[in-house]
Amino acid sequence: MIAVACLLTAFALAEEPTMTMKVIKCKQAVNLRKGPSTDTDSLGLVPLNTELTGCAAVEGSDWIVVTYQGITGYIRNDFLELLAVEEPVELGPIAERELPAEAPIADINQESGYTDDGIALEQAVGGITVKARRIYTEANEYLLVVGLDASGNEVWRKQTMTPDVTEMTQTDALIGGTADAPLVLMYNDWLGLSALDPATGEVRWEITKDQIFLGGSISRVVDANGVLYIAGYYGPDPVAISANGEILWQADCSDRQAQWMTMMELTEEGISCWYGSIKGDEGETTATVVFDFNGAVKEIIYD
Image 1 (cartoon, rainbow, N blue to C red):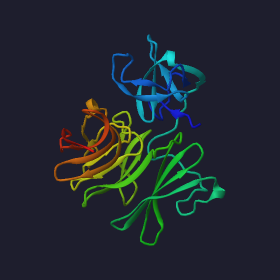
Image 2 (cartoon, one colour):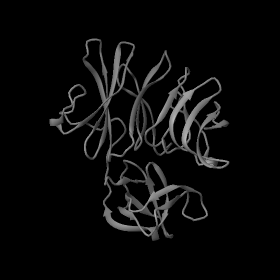
Image 3 (cartoon, rainbow, N blue to C red):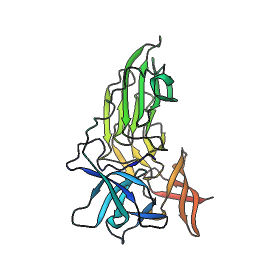
Image 4 (cartoon, rainbow, N blue to C red):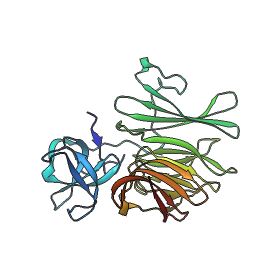
């Protein structure tokens, strides 16, 4: 079993050791609560026997704070069994994790011990071709992004990695910005979002996970003004980020408990998002939610 990582502040040196814990004493699953109280909303269910790493106790309470499949919440200590105490680790900043020399973008092979997930991005931006590729080991997901000149020579290289592997993709890359000022957007759900200059690979701006959490298996679109609309599979709802790295707004469809977004499309009316789970008038269903360009829910079209 791959343990589900649940570090509070990803890739930062924790002040106290964290814990590996296992869900127990429930029939099938336990509620992941929005706050350390049974009076708060459920953010979802964590199945029996799930192992959670990096968990931390809430001082003065019977609750443990965890993150399950990208969603941070609280579980009562009664439903968790302590498996191990983990010492804090420090893992480094966005877009600066080094890949081993035996993992070049054009030559990933079985002998190297890596799994090549294929090209995630290949797009010409001016005189530079930007390529991105996901690479997996048993314990890590890497994202390698390079800029190549017209002869195919590497001009710059950036990479990032995650401290675990899950069923979701945890990294991504796309071309953002505007036609006159394009950017290479490089995402790691443990760290945040980096915007790179396509010509040099220089970091223009970064948004850390502490500022906004997006989750894994993201959906994303960019409009003509360079505004990035982005959201994760388990939430939160779409976030709008300007071409200059300013967080403009974050939508909120929590009253419908919407999650499992797998499609995002830009339309004249707004941002159209398909959710695989949403609370309808007659219970859980699927639906397309249209958010306007200020982040408000404009329309819900149930399937």
